[in-house]
Image 1 (cartoon, rainbow, N blue to C red):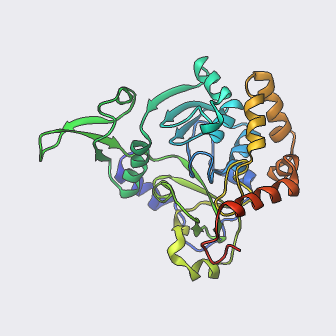
Image 2: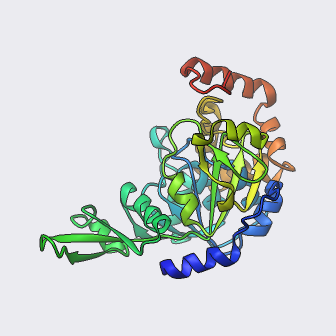
Length: 322
């Protein structure tokens, strides 16, 4: 997208009124995520990723998504396993980090079911969102030019007019839809994140449509007591979905830890296509919604264990965290 075209799109399509944007996961996906959409998810790796929306995309059988895999692990692997993704722009994907490689995603790429259309470094991909957020067509950088990832990116090399040295121009990226999971938000979409925001500040400002999923919806007065924590203001947001434990089996800093038992089960089952279908049937197709999934993974007992584990690991640094 041209930056001026993006600016005009925002001017015509974004709400600036203080109206409630509360929706169910089903409503948010149905309204904003269509077949062939270019989608990007916030968070990082297994941390603070909106798995609730991933499940709903699968349940609604959305197809041919193009996925911005800037640090994508369980999220993208679930979507690929369910046949929802056809193309990937990748900085980091197809591995579950220290837990091992991702069988479903790797199998799909190796058999040609999913195409890797471009490759980036983590920094380069995040700078694409930064360029879009700044209203620029590109950002100059001194990365990827010396690597073969440059052959599969849409960057260009020019001569720096000041030094006459080569410089890489990294093009802006405007996702059709971004989904960001946060610690708390109000009904209008003012959203606050505890700890590191990764690149969600930029992603929220780069995307055409933005779905916020939150552990908790709080009164606007609570948000206003600490306005400096509002990473994402309401006028960027198109939907607010309240879903406690919405990042499970991933980590939500200061609230609950990784569910290593569940990751192990997923990686074991997805070694085969039959096992993959078994997982999807048990945890997504076979339950009515994300609450049903949480009950199936162990319910309150498991979630309480994960909360206690996170409390042992961290110390509260924010007033609203007990």
